Image 1 (tube, rainbow, N blue to C red):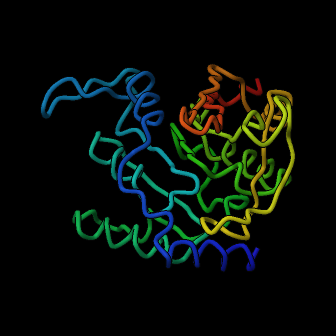
Image 2 (cartoon, one colour):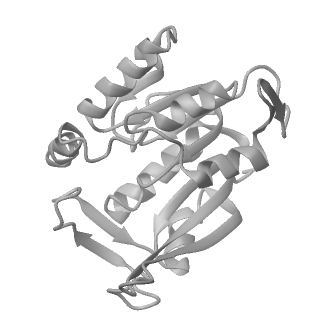
Length: 234
């Protein structure tokens, strides 16, 4: 784990993963299931909850989704393996005058999330669970389910093996050789592998496979975008 932390710290030191705007699928998830902006300073909660809803960004990077949800009126938190990412995320929060930011954005392992069971109403994770070994992703999914309340919702995305360099149903782990995220793991998924990942912890509400193609070169890649609900054990 320490080796992977160094690789991610190096990536953030190089500012390879400095992303400041929320991903469009995270925005879509929020607007459909949590809260939608309906005016310049007006918001409508889709699923009203008692008190201020809590949301955790699992693998938060420098905090782009934390502060998107903060601006939408949610009580937002984050965890990331990279010390360098957390430094920037906390500085961003301090610049926004968010109190107790060091207690809301934590450096740590997503296999051991440092919050109590059933703390959060929602969780999101973008570009995280396919950047690690499957066994680690499985453990982290179990942890994410643990910290979610009953019937809590979870958005995440996963790289599909359906791309220019692999077969339609390819799944497996590869070491990234390109400069961006060099030395980290890339785990590719197909639908069967997704079901294996989530089967113990979540039910699928949505699964969409979105393709991005370079028309000039013909190269393409695809990602699964999932909306999941924590299973009711009762």
